[in-house]
Length: 517
View 1 (cartoon, rainbow, N blue to C red):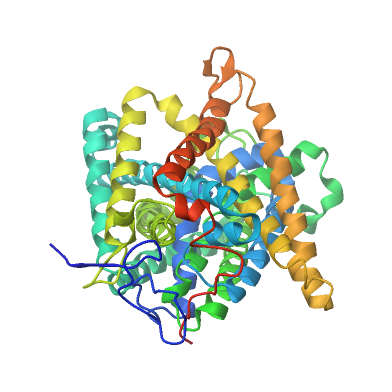
View 2 (spheres, rainbow, N blue to C red):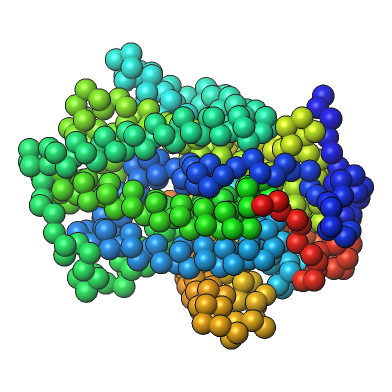
């Protein structure tokens, strides 16, 4: 069994950092990642190929020809929040991100709930990504062998869950072995994914005029005045919650990044911008080739909504269509592995500061990874997927819809924490006013508006799949219920680990860990 380091202010102090007073290292190894590696991790976690194939159809249904400008509108709250993350990271680089920063700004109780929102969102997404990887794995085998029956194996619940467990186990194993192994895997999978997306876009542009449903490019697609209803704007913001979410993993590895105070924040913002460019290119190319009609290749054809790339890969890419299925598989598999970075390091930080049981603070001596937390995240996400998949497909789908509530909650909370944490310096310069007050407040308030509006909408029994509990929509029960469950766990931890909740282990004036440059 691999030896572990225990490094927590609430427990043993095995590893003191030079010049850091009584602040101890979590045991993570600094300087392992450069800017390129962190950006690759961010793109991997967002998983553009997987996200686009499931999001393009429903979004076109809402936005029509204004799809590109809707992507731009949805990008606004994400870039505003990313700027808040960058400011907080430059001041206090810490793998706990939301948990640590919100605790410093608003105190231990609000900070704990912020950390819970981040953990819950990531665990749910991990289970979903594993499920998507399973579906595309059998689809790829079907296309490779020419046996349509293989694709139907994903519908076998027992086989589906067992295959899912294999994917999760592989992702946990790679994550446990450290960032060197992770980088090799991510460079390969993300590189292939982007290469195929580039091929798809290039062939769509080259062959768009041959499609019966093709439409020519128009700059009017970027004209915000042509958006007909506020519902389309709301759809754009709601879309951003899913299609851009994941860039914050760049900040989670700040303690393991070269010059982490600067590099991690820059990587998060750069990742969001790169993904926006990918989305715009793919959406424009797809619209030009397929059009927005409801027949044939049209993006509004309900038969194409569930998986746009499966519907359009053959018409656009011909014999290379199988590469697109493999790209979506690699996208979901890469994201499954990279997403483990966030909950494992958040669990590590929460335990390090005494907010969770001590075992979560254990770091592998050999691989310098939060081994216990990584395995725990894998077990919980796999168990969650297995239970929900067996109980009901609708439950799983509604859980993913409820995910938006948690993302809005912890992103919005972090943005507002930035404004409050820096409140004494926001008027010292124009830069501080914009990046420490204006951008964080606009982003945070915007996301909380979406949070409350979605919560109200999801009260209706017809919201989502139409499932309900005593007349209340299942999405509301799951979303608010998971946050309420976090509050219960918080009360339990307050009794078991009172030091953190008394402000003894993490306060506003707690010095930041020394992150090597």
